[in-house]
Image (cartoon, rainbow, N blue to C red; front, side, top):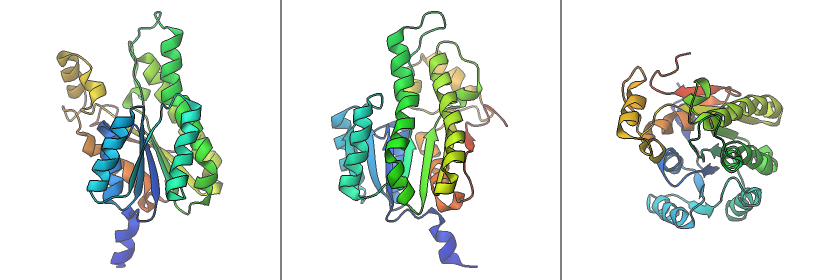
Length: 256
């Protein structure tokens, strides 16, 4: 047994990871996981102070980090995020598209403004971030993209149908990117969480939160830290032969 070889499967030393929506919830936990695994991490969110606080937090944990304020619905901000990452660290190896918004409007009552915001942040932003970073990902010997979608991509939805549709769209792009970029050495996969105890879930009523938590086989919501293992696996050398796939981490909500 080559113990050193196997220990390196989850080693991100020297790699640079961008995590959008990285200042709270699932994104913050994933950013912490990358730092613990040796990566240099760039966290992005729309609030500058949250970015600065998360940068300080990750540096205090022993990592190299940068916080960049970026509204993912703004393509100029997406370009600036890539530029700031390269200016600071000189490379991009991993992108985790985690930023999302879940406006609740029932079918038949959509507004164009809500539509533009949801699909801009949840779908257009991630696709264009990968496109903007593509020249740098092509240079990486370990390039990986992890698109955080949702178990909702597989389920019917009422008030959150725009969110579910945007996540289903990102799943489709994950598969297309996986096929398109495979020969360029870039793996692209998706992580589909179920109910996770985050601000997005807490915005629901206590009754709805309980229903969401108990809908899965495990009868509970996940902690955001429980998404770190699946996300790091998809980005790591341990998943070197995995691309175009969806890893569902939802406690059994949508068994496949």
